[in-house]
Every structure is written in structure tokens, then in C-alpha cells.
Amino acid sequence: MIYISTDYVFPGVEGESPYEASSPPRPPNQYGQLKRDGEIVTLEATKDSGLGLVLRVPLLYGPAERNSESAVNVLLDAVTKAQDPNAGVKMDDWAQRFPTNTEDVGRVCSDIAVAYLKRKEEIKSLPKILQFSSEDRMTKYEICEKFAALKGVGIPGMVRNKEGNEPNSPVQRPFNTKLSTKELQNLGVNITTQNFEEWW
Image 1: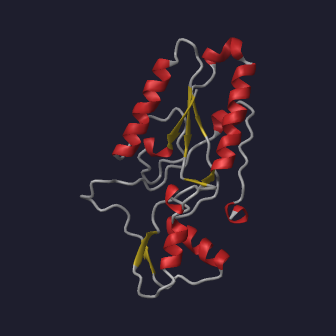
Image 2: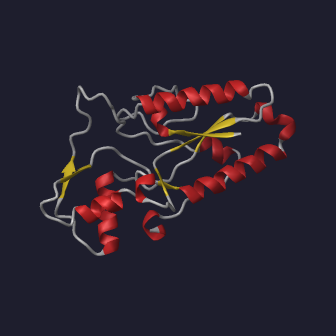
């Protein structure tokens, strides 16, 4: 069993990343805490068999029936709206994101399963927390800039938000939760990813 978790189990404080799989989780918000709770339950439920592990991934994009199904794909709609100079679409240009393709995540899950089942005799001693991420680093605003360039349109109605988190906001978002992929590399799993712009 591979439980898909998130980079949001880490606080993303400036200067702390990249986070190793062994770094102590400190979720900054409820989403991160719920995913961390799922990690704990998964590892506890499979500790006797050794047939369970956690795979943490960052912001994902890929094929979707509706753009709203992905926090990246939905930015295509924001780009369309921001072609109107009066749209006033506020877009985060602070948090560092590492958009990763779902097809790459699927391939990595398959490779992990094969690698672990080939070593079934020692499966209990293999790492139980793995991390996978693209190296493509950008803010959501920069993603929108790339989409606009690919579509050949301007985004005069989009406003850069470099403010970061508001001190009293109920939802705190991390600045940079870059995930280290060392554990996957040590297992011999291919960590290459598709180029963001080429895929789109």
C-alpha cells in the first residue's frame, strides 16, 4: 500500500528546505496535519507486514476532466480571466512551488512497488517514508506567466501578491517545502520528471 501524502507536512520556513524524509513533520495547517495523521495510521496498520509506505509529493498537475480538479490546472482559468485588464486577479508570487506531473508520480509508484516486492525478504527494513518532486521551481504567478506565454496572451488583469502569509490568517501556507528525493535515489528509482512547459 502506497499512501500519497504531501509536502505540507512540513512548515516550509525560509531556509529550512530541502526537507529529508526523516525531517520532523510540523504541519503548518489543517490539510498538512490531516495528511500527517494518514501517514501515521498507514505506517501503524502495516508495520507487522511491512507492506505499507508513505510517498510525499508536492503540487500536482496532469490530465483532468475539469481544471478545478488541480491547483495547477485551475490557473489556466485564472489566466483566461486575467486577460481582462480590470479583472483584479490576485495571484501568489511568494510561495515556492515544485509542480510535479501525475504521470511521473504514477510511474514512480509502480517502480517503488516493483523494487519493494523484489526485496520482499527484507521489506520490513526498507524505508517507509519516501519523497518525490520535480526540480521545476516557481510561484503560482510564474506558472500563470508560463501559461500566458504558451497561449500567446497577456495577463494585464493579474496582480502579483508578494505579501506571503497574513499574520492572523487561519490558513498558513509554507514558503518552501522542497522535498529531498535521496531515499528514492538510494533505492535506484528513476526520479526524472517531465519538463513543465514541454508537457503543457
